[in-house]
Each structure stands twice: as structure tokens, then as C-alpha cells.
Image (cartoon, rainbow, N blue to C red; front, side):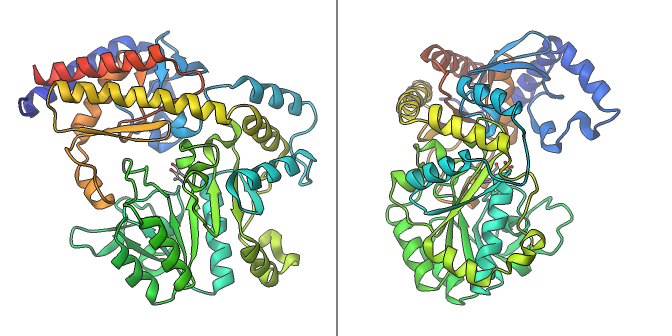
Length: 451
Ligand SMILES: Cc1ncc(COP(=O)(O)O)c(C=O)c1O
């Protein structure tokens, strides 16, 4: 295997940029127009972070595919960064939404269906009590507030290079010397996260004990497998240590299943028998309709109720007028009942194994120092020979140029991967042919780099 030639990579990126421009003329035109009313030409700033010098404007999306305004068709392995893991416009969800639209959308009062959803969440995740929000960010925020209220402790603990949405307290990382710092580009924090938060590396039990032993940490907010700086699995025994130490030092354990719901119908929590105090989840829960939930134990519920001044509950920092609205609930019920089923996971995980095998075969064929990691129906390739153990190691392995090239090469050939890394999700509509096509395009990208 030859070394990656950086000058060649630069040249190849230029060629792909030109091809992208030529085949996305209408998107470019819309992008120019969008600039006049939307900063960066996009409704959300991170949408400029795609490969290609401007974003692709979507025309329509169905199942595992979408088409853009230029008529290009794509296999979507990004699936709205998990928000559309259900496939785009899943039939059962669309039917439920269409019906609900005619029966009122939001009242600040419950409809009966919300009880079905609460009971289903109980059944899947094993936690007895549930509340609703519109985004996973908010679900995390509210769980953290509850934990601080109950414990009276000021701090929270997170892992280096975690992502839990735009939750202020989580935007903290370790620098190269291992000293905590406000995360790069943390925009206008209301308070420096050094005051609110502690941060340690994933898989480091000694650091965990040190962080907790001061008994000032209300909650550890954790993905059970890190997914936002690549997929990083826990070492054997790590979750047992997390649970034992958080209990020993009186810190609540909040497991964020927003991405790890790719593991199975009850997330990583049910698949691996975790026992969190809180669980949070958003994104695919309602087939792409904004909806999120947070669940908690009997003990949390009791302690929270004792501290709660119900008369002020509407202005206490846990809120959202539209949370638990009828549309989200109808979409959640239909999605849980018909889309995110046992059968879906069984099929999707099998297909993801094929995806992983395809990439592994190419890596082996060309003797590349790369790997591919999988969690349920999610997988990701890394441009390093061994799996990173923590966020710091993973961050150091990021290769922005190579990432950009692999993404753009795929995009120009009708494949959308998850941005910011090389992640792929399988939806209920993704086929073996889609997976085989990805393997073929991945191989062509490798040939273009190393031949
Ligand atoms: C693990 C995790 N939690 C929470 C969130 C926040 O989700 P949202 O942006 O939908 O609020 C994300 C977003 O990527 C996430 O990856």
C-alpha cells in the first residue's frame, strides 16, 4: 500500500469540486438567492459544513433516497443524522400525522394517545416515568436541571468530545495537556463551562472516580457508546464501573440514547442491561417530526416531586409550550408501533453488517491502515489503524481533507454520508443494492487515491 499523497489529494478535491458545481447548477442558483435572506445561505449554520462549496437543495425524500433540485438521486446513508433513521416519510407515520392534522395540533392538554406512548417507553427502556420535549437538546437540559435540583450540587460531568446538542454545560473539552477548556467555537456562552462542568476521557475509570469523589457532581451525562466523534465502544466492564461509581458518590447517571437508539428497539440501555437514573432520546422517535423524551426512575420522580413548586412549574426552566403536542405524539405512537420495530432492527443490523464487510474487504484489498466500526445499524470508517479509546484520541485522528474528499466523491456519485465524519445508517427501506453500490463507490475512491 502506498502512502497518501497530499498534493494528489488536493488536486482530486479540486476535480470533485468542479464536478459537483457542474452537476448542481440549480442548487448553486438557490444558494446565491438564499444568501440574501439567510446568513451563509442556509437556515442553520452547520448546514454549510457539507462537502461541496454550497449545500445541495433537496426536492423530495422518500424511504432511503432523496432527489435534489437538479434531478440528482441519492442513497441517503446520513438520514438526517439519525432524525430520519426511520426512512423518509414512513408510511405509518405519515398516515397518523395526516389524520391528526385534522383534529387539532396543540392545546396544552393531553390526548389519550400520550398514555400509550408513556407505557411503550416504559416497556422498551425500563424506566417508569416519562416527560416530553421537542428536541434531544431540551430533553438533556431538563434532565440536568432535575438532577441539580434534587442533589443541590452545582456541577455536571461529561466526556471529552461528547455531543449532546447545544446544551451549554456540555461544551467543554480537554486541551492537549488534559486541562479542561471551553470547547473551540463555543459561541457566546452564558457562563464559562469551567464553572458548571467537569470533563474526563471516556473509558478512564480513575479519572471518573477523581471527578466524582468531590461529591459536587449532580449528574454524569453520557452516550453509552460515543458516536459524535466517531463510534467509540466502552471497554469491557466500563459501564459497570460507571454505574457503581456514580452510585457510590451520589451522582445521577443520565444515558443519552439519541444516537445509540441504533443499537436496538430499547437502545443500548435495553440491549446491554444498563440501569440509568435518567434516559434521554430525540431525533428518530417520531419519524422526523420534532419530538424528544426523558425518562427517570421511581426514586428520581419522588425526590423531584418533593422539591417541585408546582405553582411555578411553567416558569421554572423546564418547559416548551409545544412540547407533548398532539402532532408529535401521534407521530411518536405511529413510529414506535410500526417503524422502529424489532423486525426493523433485525433487518437493518444484518444489512449494516454487510455494509461493514464491504468496507472491510476494500480496506484489506488495498492494505489500508483504516478501520470500520459498527454499532447496531450505524457504522463508520476511520483513517487510523486501531479503534480510538476516547474522544481525545479520536479527535486527533480526524483528517478534514480526506473526510472532505471521501464525502464529495460519494456525493458526486449519488451517496450521502453523515457529515463531519464518515458515518452510515441503515433505514427500513435501504436495500442490499444500496449497500453494494456504496462498496463499489468506496472502492473507486480508494483507487483514485492510491493508484
Ligand atoms: C447524542 C446526542 N444527543 C443529543 C443531540 C441533540 O439533538 P437535537 O439537535 O435534535 O436537539 C444530538 C445531536 O446530534 C446527539 O448526537
